[in-house]
Image 1: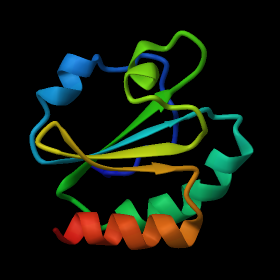
Image 2: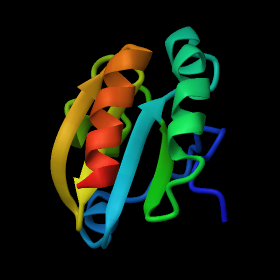
Image 3: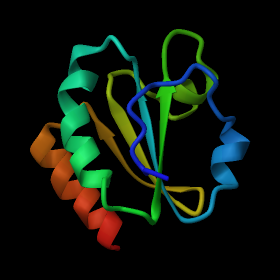
Length: 109
C-alpha cells in the first residue's frame, strides 16, 4: 500500500477515529481543486513515497466540516502531523521547503 493518497476525500474520519490511530499519521486538509494543494502535492508524494511507517489521510475540507474545524483549519493545505493520535505539529499552507524540512524530521523521529 502506498502511503501517499492523491485525492482529498469527502468521507472524513471522526476526531475520535483520529485520536485512536497508532503510529505516524499525516492528516492533510484541502480540496482537489485548490491551487495551493495541487502545488504541494508533488513534494508530498515524493516525501511520503518511501515512508511505509506513515498513514496519509487526505480530507476534503470546507464550511461546516467538523474535523477541519476541530483542528482550526482556516487555510489549505493544512497538514496535521500526529503520533499515536496526538498532534505533534501543524503546517499551515507550507512551502515545499518547509514541508520537506518538517515532514523529514517527523518521519525520522
